[in-house]
Length: 566
Image (tube, rainbow, N blue to C red; front, side):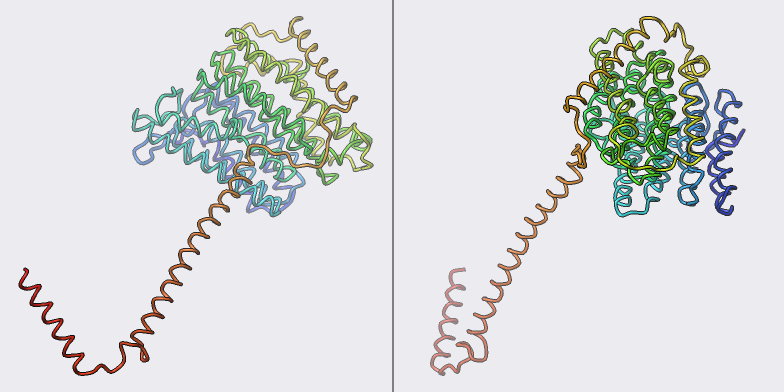
């Protein structure tokens, strides 16, 4: 039973307490204290299964802590703290409760030892997170939230269907490593893929994250997709197909991010790109590769949150995140600009920043497996990251053409949140040993600051900087213009409805034609019957007696003939 309180319940209890508190600093303190308490609990609990409960004949494990689940739980608690600090000014009860329930559900899913518990928390993240989109309270946000909710809930439906089939096949609901090869495991795999934004299943991410509130986007960026990364690492480590899926994920968002005008959408595409590195590591499946995935997820949550925070601060002060409407903001928002540059350097894997010491583990694991083509694709993707996130985000927001805007610096609490996150990005980059120490497997021979690695990475980054400068100076780089870029979501947002409307028109036209024809035929028949049998019709006239006798005789003769023949 309950040896300890499940960590997720701490967040759920805090959400209930929050509703009883008046709006103000007390709620803000509760939002900050809750993830600290949860993190301390998990850190001090040690490894093991701490909560087992019976449920309709199943033994559910609500709190399994091991090396993999602990690191994800700790970074989720850290992200919840930083996100709530960034959102200190928010007095919206809906956003505050949603943030707690969302973080609690994500942590509960990470700690789930069985797939039924995973399902409940999986759907909990979907339902709680959509309110961070709806909290913007616009018609566009409502429609986007509905699309997001449908996709996320559908992911859960596919998950529970897969679990049911998997249980029928194996008699187990344990959330452990699985092998693709049965309908159940394929359904579970596809469910994880939807939440991880696999290619062609990714559009919900770029659609929904930029549609959320300023603070909601920061919180959204930390949990949903990284929960899917954890689920894949737990259930499908070493699955070959993930290597190729992840490689595609690292490559295709680069081109969309380069032409995108909305900086929050650029970051959403960049998020998809970074997920690809993690998925490749899961597909490789070695201890080093899984360490690379876990460490990259840890660092990614921090530097991606930092970038979303800095762009969110710009949106908060200027009312826009469109690159074509920004520029020159370093004059009045210098601290935000510096923090943005730290996030940009981290995601670009500059030496002395967090991305450098975490991404190197995945690249080394790929190299050890002698997968040259995959390694080259990841290197190319790393250069693309520098272009669209390392350069584009800070350059067009703070240093490009002067937009004439002179907004105030970000609020103090936002600066504190960005400052702490930036400090962690630099600290991990300079001294990665504490992070390496909490990875799922023992880190052996991990020396990111070798001469060869530093030199090769600097060469890659400097040549990417040179290429951007050349393209920008020559006017070849895609200009920042007000436009709507078409992605594969066009198929179900535009083409799909258009086809449905056309089919509805065709079916409606055929239906109306048939109904019209039947109506005309019926009217014509009634008119003819009226003409023949009506009060003035032929059949209503008086007939002579002789004619009636003749008709009866003919009828009688016909009857006798039929009787004779039979």
